[in-house]
Length: 250
Ligand SMILES: NC(=O)c1ccc[n+]([C@@H]2O[C@H](COP(=O)([O-])OP(=O)(O)OC[C@H]3O[C@@H](n4cnc5c(N)ncnc54)[C@H](O)[C@@H]3O)[C@@H](O)[C@H]2O)c1
Image (cartoon, protein in one colour):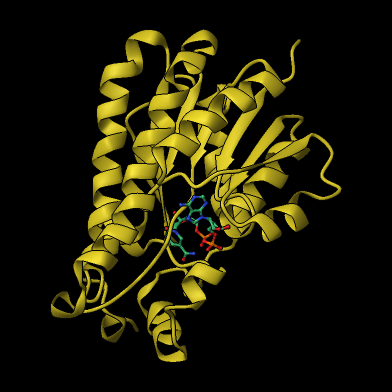
């Protein structure tokens, strides 16, 4: 049996790196894509079966050049995880257009560009796309006009992909993580915010990178062969508790 290959964007750290390690442990080859040259070199060093690719997913020319390089290295692509993301928070009146665009160009444009570029390869393997959105794409909050809107758009983009690519056997699903202690989250989560999250989440804690990776791995696997167009929150129950106020607990 030929070894399967997965492309993971934003694989230099956090959820992407944990997912890369998980897939390697399950016998997959991993194309680790990131725009952070130094961190990607450190992260991929010594990972047998992983190959790093430097690319900024928000720049069309870089995506157009990188996907053929990945296919030249691995011959085939069985799954793609659009995980690269940035978080910038601010009130609506202080979110200037440059900030809005920075968030949209990675979180939304990047998912569109990478997914579009891999469609021919995924048609050949009847492969899978997993897009990483966020609890912020399911529930609105203050300060997330750009981030939350970009993630809600990723949820809809996933459904568009599932609707259109299903006839080629390509599945597209979306994972919405709750808070995870990565560099991205810790840059915008103060101790007050961490405590409030613990209160509001039924499981009373943040998730781990690997817990999110497990859901991604399932959606990439044969076990999920009849699952497409789905949005799965891996969030400790956060999304399901609209009126689950901490004050209403015993
Ligand atoms: N950590 C959380 O609490 C949380 C919650 C919900 C959703 N998410 C989502 O999970 C995904 C991974 O986040 P994380 O917490 O692991 O973040 P992280 O900052 O630890 O890792 C993100 C990686 O993406 C890379 N990246 C960013 N922009 C890129 C670009 N344009 N091109 C290529 N690489 C790029 C970064 O260099 C970094 O290595 C993101 O899409 C994020 O929005 C995270």
